[in-house]
Length: 255
Image: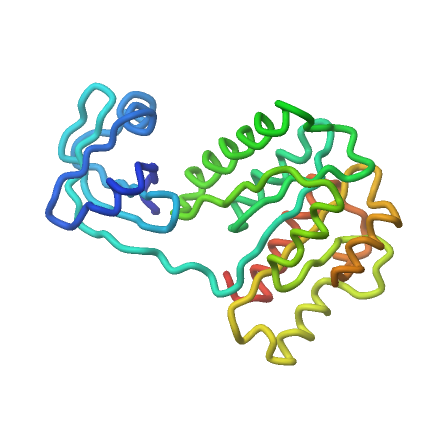
């Protein structure tokens, strides 16, 4: 059984070495001590959210703090192939469902997208509030799934901004029901060609409830994006991204 994971300040976590005592405090310490009611003798891990993980046995539990006798410390390896979910804002919390599941499935970053047909809008102060909500969401999901890496959450972009951002990844795949080839076929072809022998990054773009417009597809294709379908069925905005990530995790040997 995997050990419970908590997050701590980066500099403090990275300074911990085997044989020392690390004190987990703040919200995470209170959660461990008060909510989880962990006791001396139990084993936990603590991460800085950027892949550095320490592990050990609890020596003592205080009021909102946990003293951890550090037994192991080190950097978890990052995946060879980085995966990014570009998720269109969607009503009914479907975008949040997608981001939460994507985090549990190992996505490395998420990009909120103001698609033309997005009903939900992050404008003005809502833009940063919305991003911070996603930051909290991915943090909780990473903790639940015992991930030492917390996905990056980018600022919201419109389609023009997304087209510009596309230059930061090696390839962009837009999930679309009218695509002629499947995502599996495209990735398999890349593997056969040897392109995926080296580190790379792939962004998967998921549209809103009303779909992606022809004009948006044109803008994204102009910067090298390709369209792909997952299978014979049309998936919701909340499930398309996670389904693609499961497939990519398998085909890219991340799992």
